[in-house]
Length: 460
Image (cartoon, rainbow, N blue to C red; front, top):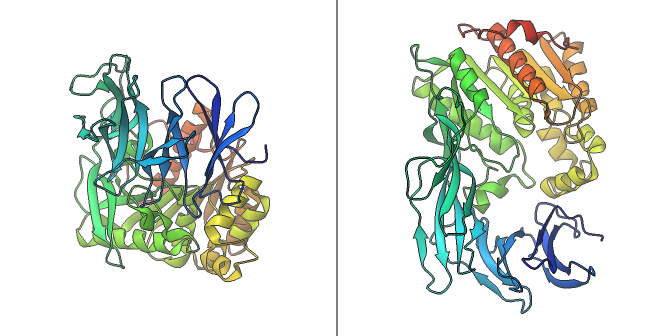
C-alpha cells in the first residue's frame, strides 16, 4: 500500500482495518482509510484538507461499523463517530474547545469514555449516545497515562503527578486499586503557573520549587520537545533531581504546545523558533519580577525541540542565561534536514512550508547556527551517534563553530539514536547533566554519586 501508515485499528470482528496515512504529503494532517482486512480492498476514505484525523477505536460490538475518530473541524482535536458503511460522521458535542480524545468504549457500545486535556491535567467524561448526556467523572487531580472501561462498567485510570509515579485508581474512589510494591520517595509538587507573553496571551506552565533555601533561587527553564507536545503534572525523576540540587524548575507550554487550542498549536507552521523563544523570555521576566529566579543563576535546558530552543535562546539572548544544556538538538536546520529520515523530512516540509531551499530566509533567521558566534554562556550538548531525527553531523557543525572561537562547551556522545532506551545509559546522561550544572551554576548542590560517572564517555 502506498500510504505511509502509522497506526492501525482492527474492528471487533477483525474484518476491517483502519489506517492513518499521509499519502497526500502532509504528515501534520493525516487522513484515514478503511480496508478489508482480508483482501486489502478500500472500503472507505476520510480526508480533511489542512486538518488532522486520527482513529481511536472501533465499537466493541462485532459487525458494528462505527469507528471513534478524532477531527479538527471545529478547533483542536475533538471526538466523533464515523459510520464507515454509510459515511456518516456524528460529532460528539462538547462545551469546550480543548484537546479531547476517546479513551475507550463501554462494553455494550452505548457510551464513550472521553479524555480531556486541560491546563496540563487530564479529566474523564462519559458520553452516552442514547441521551446525549455528557457526564464528568470524579477523578483525582493529575495527568493520566491510560483509562479503560472494565467489563462490569467500572472505569480504571492510571494517574501520576509531581508527588507520585503512576498509580491505578477506580473512578469514584480515592484509595488506589494498584500501586508499585516499593514506591519511591514523594516528589515536590508541580505548582500551576501562568503569565502573559509579549502578544498579551496567557501562557501556562509549572513551577517545581525546592523545599529549602531563600529566594531568589537558581532557576532551570526545562523546555519540552515536540514542538507539538505539552508539559503535564507528572512524575518526573529528572525534574526532582534538579530540585534536589536547589533549582526551581520552570516548565512552560509555549506557543506550539497542544491542549490550548488549534490556533495556539499551529502558530509555528511557517513561523518556528521565534514565538517559543519570545514565550520563554516572557516567562523568565515574570519569575525575575516575582523575585523567584536569580538572574545570575538562571539556566535553560531541553531535549530535541527543547534543545533547538536552548541553542536558539543562547544565540538570540546571549546575556540572559548563565549555562545551557541542549540534548539531541536541531543546531543547523538545513544540514539536519539533509540527513533526516524521509518521514521527518516530510514533517519539516509541512512545518516550514517547504524544504530549507524553498524558505531560505526562514532558515537564516531561525537556525541556531546563524547565531552561534553570539553565544556567551558555556554549553553542554548531548547527541546520539545514530540519530535520524536530529542527526549528529549538524550538531558537529555547531560544535566546530564553538571550537573555532574557543568557546567553553562539552559534547557527550552516546551510541544509540534520538533517545536511548537503555536505562543505565539514560541515568548516565542525567548524571552528566547534573555534574555539568554543578560546575557551571554557583551555589547549587552536587548530588551524591554523580562524580564517578560524569566522565563517561570523554567529551569530544
